[in-house]
Image 1 (cartoon, rainbow, N blue to C red):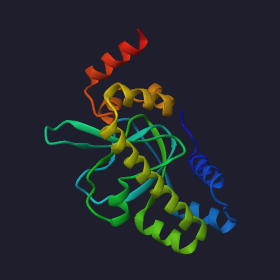
Image 2 (image 1 turned 90 degrees about the vertical axis):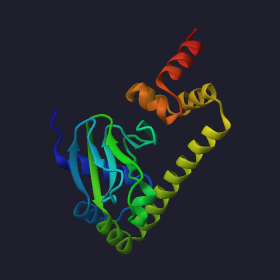
Image 3 (image 1 turned 180 degrees about the horizontal axis):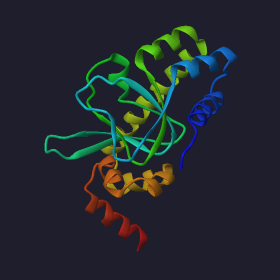
Length: 198
């Protein structure tokens, strides 16, 4: 289905308005600095080993951060859901080579902002300065929480916590990505799921 580009910007502005107070100038800055685009499923928009160029807002669809480990296996580290931002956050902030890929799991409607434009936006708007801090703090907190869960919970506990906290992801994310996010093989996750159901 074709969705007019302006609706993606509207979704961004409406979502931001729930978190920060946007002046009419802020809205105009949004429209001038953010760029809407549609990306199909399984496409990588930012590559591991390259400096990230954009911060993405997900108007529709699901995304993930992942990297290839020493065995060449994929390890998912973060999921992006509708109404949230995604990037290889620390690499984006510091303009350094990314250790992760940013991939669309489903067809996605995105609104992106280039790093130089985000810097300008933060300089020009106090509201966006506060928002950017919130976005990056939440992303870092999520990453730390996952690392803590991997270190302190067994596989079944990690899965139960995941379905309790992220029920929507179960319906929209392939099992192999959830398994890698939880630090296990797909067959291990399938066994745990069978045990919970039985």
